[in-house]
Amino acid sequence: ADDEIKAVLDWEMSTLGDPLTDLGLLVAYAERSTLDLSFVSNVSAAPGYPGTDEVIARYAERSGRDVSTLNWYIGFAFFKLAVILEGIYYRFSQGKTVGAGFEAIGDGVPPLVAHGNAILKED
Image (cartoon, rainbow, N blue to C red; front, top):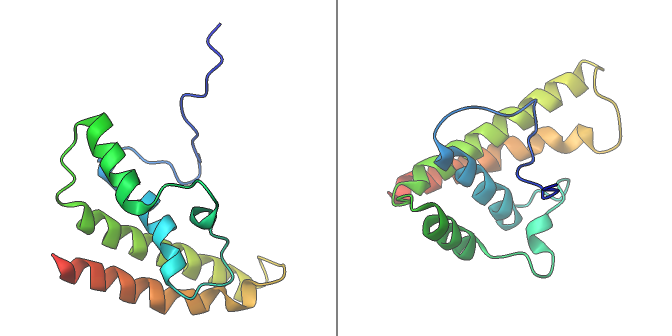
């Protein structure tokens, strides 16, 4: 029996489409550490976690895909993360999401949008 993990899916957030969308989101999650989002944990700071350039290079090498337009996907991913945070904050403000830390989650939206815009302007 083959007992290797082949994929991990977040069914709530899974989509079908361009695979570079997923790579862009992975990079955005890793690059959040450059923003002041103290309420979000950052696995990319863990020892042994590959840097952004290494992740992109490995992906390009192993998939054979052209990643020259990746900045568009990274910018899009930052907008997606901003929308997710805004949705969580809205549910919190309506009393539908409870717990410590949610009162500040809306503060993460402007830096995510600004960073997404900055990445798009690089191209």
